[in-house]
Length: 79
Image (cartoon, rainbow, N blue to C red; front, side):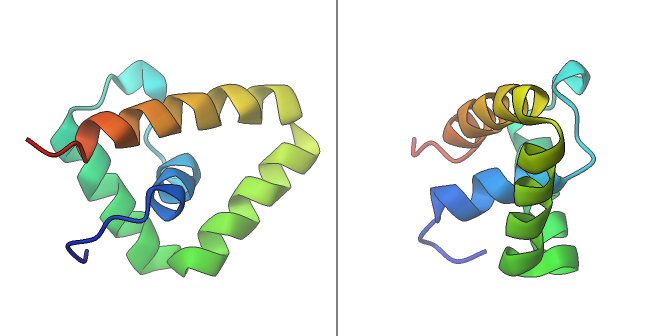
């Protein structure tokens, strides 16, 4: 991942990953999931997964995105 973190892309990648909130992932696990999902789906694929989930399950998707945004903020926070 580049030095500049695109928060939106990272959130979409975490959202599209297999990592669950109930896993209580560490910051390292969140960063690994973001990188692996972007490698697998690329930005457009992550966005497509997000759009599909919001179309089919908007309530659940909104909750997952709130979690993803918080997890990404914490995982990529500058020291």
